[in-house]
Amino acid sequence: MAYYALHELHIMPHELMAMSKPDRAAIYAMILVRIDKEKKDAAKSKVRKK
Image (cartoon, rainbow, N blue to C red; front, side, top):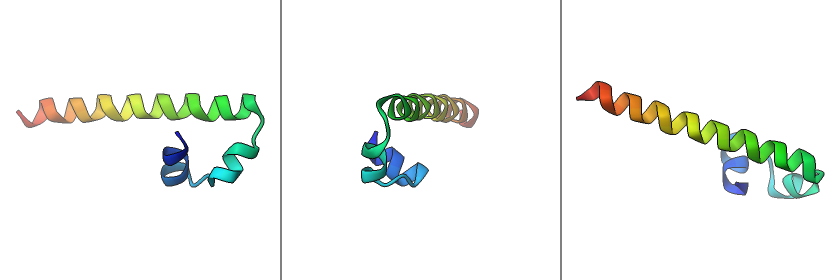
């Protein structure tokens, strides 16, 4: 999660850890939603190539 937050959202690890638990949980949930969407988009694009 910290890797994704840093590279995709540009949130430094110390900033992430300084957040309250509810804020961090919200960031993690948003990351999971985004990763799931990216996986679905990748699967759709694989199907289109065939």
